Image 1 (cartoon, helix red, strand yellow):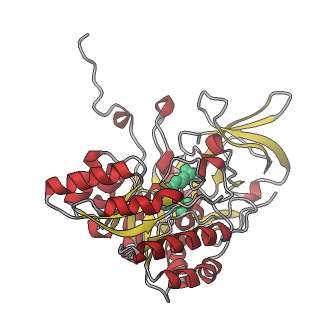
Image 2: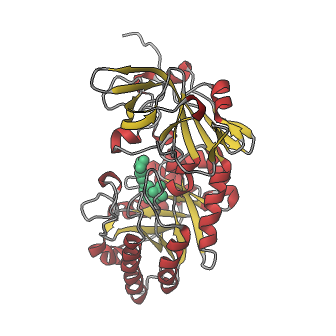
Image 3: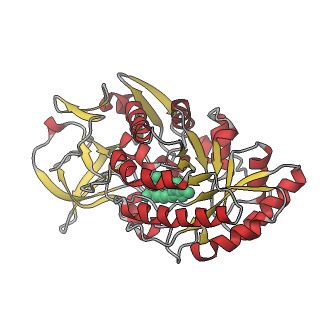
Length: 422
Ligand code: LLP
């Protein structure tokens, strides 16, 4: 059985450690399921990324949708990142994390008037608009507030990011951004609006992209548009290429930050813009695991099932995208035979699985399993279905650990819900 290769989650004498702390000790103290993150991973990934682009004027805005714990946001912010927020809720979290709104981007295909107003009142750095109607709305609200909004338009460059259909975003058929064919005319129309300063151009072509070529193709298209806009008197100052840098979940071999930089820096230099990145997954996915305990094992005559206490409510990715996450024991000494099994949760849905037909060391009741690569789009997509409490999050730093969010209580599940007289 293949074990996930990581320098942050390692085996020492057959026992899994996160950095210098045995994950079993965390399970003992806080129970399961539990998210465990490596601080060193987050720090290293941020540093590798920003170093690769050190020769050009750039800023990394961490995409908080991938992991919105306020401590994780603060960690990246303290390292020099800004924060990309996609909703009033993420904005609120970023404020709680101590992030200066001037270091936030407000993104998203359907911002409400209230979200736009909040962003403007707080003087958020840039609002990314995704339709002409939205720009009209921003202009109107900025006028009411007596402000000038700094706006970038998200252009859909119509390139195929060659990723899962649910997370590709830059095909003409996708809902995101403004179609490349009408982008120039849209800029010209928006430039006439009061209370708007059009300073940027934005794209986000998809997520979990493992090849550099779709980025190159898209940036080249945007460079042409930037030139055309400049000739027409619209001075584009920043180029935001979004996020989407892929990671290894199974056997993918994504590009490295250096390969990314080699391919893109010449195009960035040509643009003459400040470059903005919005990475999420590449900074967090492989810095986290979901630790879960085996409740029961059974065989229904057709296949083996390992029923664990983690479920689709804790980690939704396998259920909705069929995503692969390595699942492996935390104690190698306890295991040697390999079986094939479905690893499933307690939720009353056949779609509640963490893995299907997976080769795994024979597991016994009570064994702990680590679901790898769970640091991105794990906790942020967790739900309370079946009135399950969302799991705690523990951040490990060397041999120390911090509870950065506790397990929800049953009382949390009833927040503001009361029996009314009918
Ligand atoms: N910027 C924008 C505008 C985005 O929409 C996204 C992700 C990002 C940045 C960050 O992309 P990343 O670097 O993380 O790929 N739930 C899915 C992923 C959805 C991504 C949505 N947008 C998953 O679990 O795979």
